[in-house]
Length: 76
Image 1 (cartoon, rainbow, N blue to C red):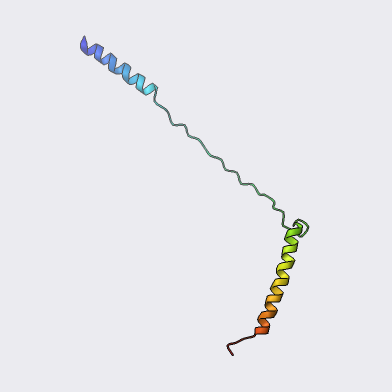
Image 2 (image 1 turned 30 degrees about the vertical axis):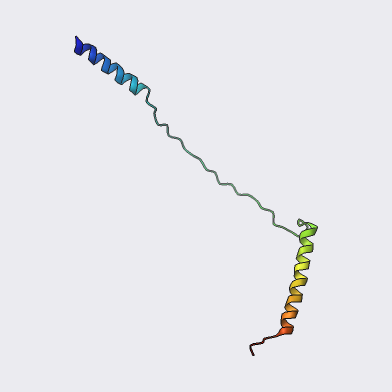
């Protein structure tokens, strides 16, 4: 009688444990590539500060190049 009760208890315990077990669900991750159009920067798209800074840089670079040419090549 003890064996029968013990067997029933073990079977009931096993069923309760297996029924509560989490099952693995397979999920798929879908990645979709999309082309994005990028507007190229034009001078109209730049602000007044950017345009002014470019002009100043250009003038400063020209002055630096002139000074370098005046100094010349000291190695020769």
